[in-house]
Image (cartoon, rainbow, N blue to C red):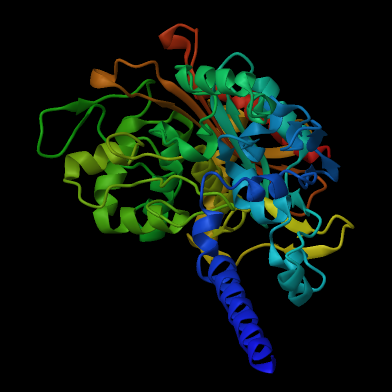
Length: 485
């Protein structure tokens, strides 16, 4: 009898071992394949089983979570969705995440290990900690000013704090309401199709993901290169520039939109936005120094993140002299995002130092305890401080007596540069209206804001499309919002 008991015991032990081996195979060896199986909804149920963390602006949430009572319980909701969509992006149960909702998903969904008070215990229990929050650097008044300024237009605004790199406004028009994409029903699918088929591409963040020819706003970079290289020394000395200017090695004659550019000083040429003077300056500076200066400002960088990625702004490194002349006035292959041009203005305002821009101030637990803090990143010296000082003079002249008068703010010093960028085959496209600027209140120890505005299209007559007329008033409103906050 005892023999049969021993056999039964051995058999039961073998069954137990087989059970343990199979459990190990399923839960350890094959766990990844089961997790990735489309039929496994446990991850989605867990992901949407608790409220998502919030994105905060000036301490107030601009996101929320709606309890649907369904299996995927919580859907994302947005406060003033179109106003903040170029920053938040969307969080959809079907289409995934974009922008801050994507880069900060670990915190917002509660999967970031830093959120767990006892990480080892969480690894054992596989419990998901409460989702955290993301605190942004945005100034709500500046963001709303950008939103209102671009109402009914296509374009973008980027504003940064020169001394730190904090992004104060980031808006792209037209915008959209990301709430429409949050759920998993027919309404979300219809919204997805509608938004993706819209020729105006409302889900494109033009402030960081679209590059444009910067036109005459790039003359800030060319002037900086000329002053740094010693090609130009005196702002009021004649530049020995003909009008028209024949591009080197060609018969193409470059002209100006205004009179008074022949042999104009750098100060006058900057105020009048003389193409001939700056094209010749770029050629005189030479390709090597022009590339060096442009790249010091951030052109050709491939790793800029705020924390989501920013499209590369470009200044061609292989140009002949005629192409260099056109590139030096922001045409030919020169391309820039509005955020890049805001960085150029910020560097001028900040003594020649470029502070990499950032949008997330810190991430926190739901209780408010800080998980991680960003803070200003190390600065790099793009141009000599003396060059930055003289550029500030040139830019304040543009606002005080030149093409940027529409950006004048009582009680503040404002510097700016207008631009009207040609594009399309034979420059047949509607010009882009640009304005880059910075502002310092009379009681402020340093400039508080730098802004870049581009208006991509306009119903105005082609001859009436100018940076000073269309883009400068928008920049003024954004700068005023920051100065008075």
